[in-house]
Length: 628
Image 1 (cartoon, helix red, strand yellow):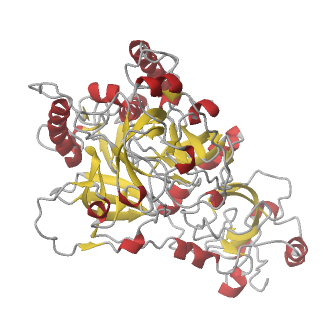
Image 2: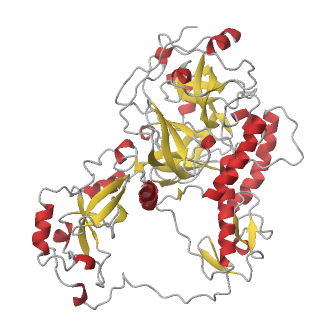
Image 3: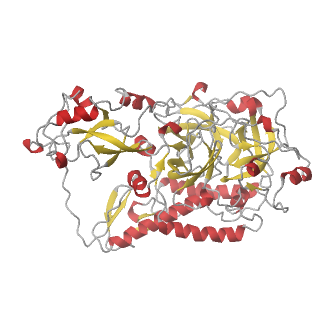
């Protein structure tokens, strides 16, 4: 096992390696501030004349790098979105029965507004610093530092069956030994040493070199699935040298005997670990595949979209009629929001016909077997009926569970559901949930589990009582036995850290925390942001990922908001609560209709049911049937 061990001193070689060399860059004059934008470095005599603010997203950046002659937008996408969103605001007004304004407001979601404002403030701070410093070091977010400095715990990889290695993580735990590059070394070539896992946080591990014992001075974080992490014995089979770190080289004269003693009986990674990682990151969806996906401008229907890119199992879908490819939608390949071509017709779901008469060259329909299968249900006996009442997560306000009504029963167990008190007259905001979806609940679920239920907008008799409401509306509750009561042994605990999609802005993956667990339902909080941005999601949602997923897949992780932006969002939220809390005492977030009326529900409606309809492997009966 230790044939690759090399006990040579670090100073015995003076040769250089091109892999280790770094190019010297001449420093810029200290009198000029440095401004970085999209990978480019610009310098200006002052921090103002060279800056511009995007009228669409609020991004502050270098004026010369902005789009078009007017420099009003930071990118082509923002320019297009600004134009199309003005039209959407006018259309939305007509749907609500309002006269269209001469100049429609640009739609913008409050969470995104707050995030962009925070980023703009951060950029402004850097510009101010640049006035006195030649260069401004910008430190990126580090999960390792974040976990260590706050003694956080991360959800284990085994909680995420849809993520890479989620089903084959094995016995990787604290104490497992691996071979990693030795950074405490002055040799010109890349050498390795053995380290043990001190702490696990998702895919990330805190490692300590063998020989340091209780000394944590050189501990370091790395991604276990990274290309530089190998099982013990890899160096021997690959002909790579094992060299002890310079700091402890003097401690032992016979390092080979030391390693034999330390590693006898110890665990290491499976020999085929890297192969398993590679295989788990192969995805069946390919670019140019056509799918049916929810129309984010009209929740009640689907439309055709084409897979533009695949990142870590997440799909960037571009609606087929989008010529400039800016009208897109992000979701996971296991999302309940996407289906094979022909799905809508087969179950009776509304579908927007494309203006494109034939497939574009190179595009092809995704095979039906690639899509997540829902659990089969028996609709022959007692079943859901139109008009029945229930409780449901509002896809336009994922922090709220609302009073809802079944508006239409489709085939194969699918239901069209509307939120009471905030439905459009034409049903354009009805949304589709499967009968087994963990995002719908029987009447009384919130009361039993001490969750705040959002009553219908404008309902005067508060506190809300289901018995009174059913009698007043002359309606009945959907039978409890028809709902999904399976609770898998998911492994999540309150306080665990993870990476989660902001489902109201689904291209963003953020640092998040599990703050509450109700059976299989998780309350996800985005670190650094107000509680009103929290989301209820299912424990098997494909929009939740282990710590380190973004690094592993190359996706951009959104760090927690800095304290300054927290203060600003807190004050603005308090003003909103004061102005909007007349009808909902204790309700922390505006309802979906209020968001629509204020034109704050984002670039488009985002139908985002944070739940996967996968069949769970456990069961528990946790609903209590309450007879009025």
